[in-house]
Length: 525
Image (cartoon, rainbow, N blue to C red):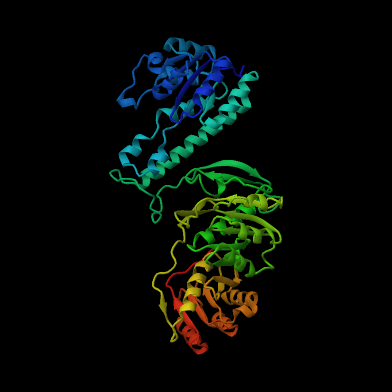
């Protein structure tokens, strides 16, 4: 009989003891008669007055090697792996062992120790061996054993047990979770050992170094309504190596976030995190249609929205400062904002913004510029790269005319902004009288650079007069640059590096433009 299960004997060994005593008391109230445990977990259970037997007493073998070996014993693993058949029962009797019905184990804090800057040897000691073996054994035998590896599941298990026993469906679900947990744990260890010399001190990850072994570990958080289109299934997963990112943020208001909302929010947040000044961005389909920086957030948002008001309908907005009442009021009056992301919200702001029921609101914490590694799945493989975190290498004016101070400020802003526009990308920017900088026209995602230039100047209209332009890659021919010059653009920043550079520079000189080569491009596919 495998369903439902009424556990009588529990083995508990937890690095994270949060809620353990309360959970154990609920298990006892539901009929558990004995706990097996070791070390600090045993002390917690003893202090709670629970019926406890220490593992070394149960096995007849003391802990050895400074605690490295505690539960690796036939009486323990036999109790977990027994199929409750007459043959297995006979083997248990011969071992002097008993069946273990419920396992409560969570693992040594390997990731936390690794990320703390601890010495290599200390990190190695946080590789859990016995705990992983216990989880795998119990999970394999889920028909007869309940496996609990996450304190968040304590309530579910206790409630189901109090209602007559733990069903097979929950046991199978918890077994799958245990194997996923150990897989993610092993992935972190494999990556660490592949990329860290044995005598090194492990500090912050070196984002310039691509790992020899890449085993991503993600945990499913929730189903999404659908993917990019209604006929595509989708779900949100949490990166176990970055549990504080966008995926973990709980919406503060509005409808459920969609697949496209998350994708656009990631683009919007990355854009404002690239600026030290107060910044606001308006994003549509991952491209900024408006982006500005200013001395205050309200001014930055006002200018960002003015970048392309028509495209801003149904947009994603992000800011890199706490959302203050003045800026919140401007956003509240904006027609149809899908989502809004800010580090935090000033007192009273959320109440005002929640008056529009469908608007999604998120607080994402301290802005963090892009860093680390980024990947994309392809059929049969994974592409992995460093984040595009740099902005210039060897900035050099290549035209006869040098850019003015105001042009230079606008060029540097445009160069940061164009990094967030899909290639081929051309972004037009200007400096306002108060020193604020903003995008006035964006050409994104075209197959030719001249088409992106044409779109950017069409979006800018009369604002192109006196503006500057940034191109994410070089102009192979002068046609794109000439399009900008005819619209009134006065200065250009681009990587250079084309065989056509001499002709493009000549065209810029003929038009009286100032042009800077950066030696670095910003493709975004």
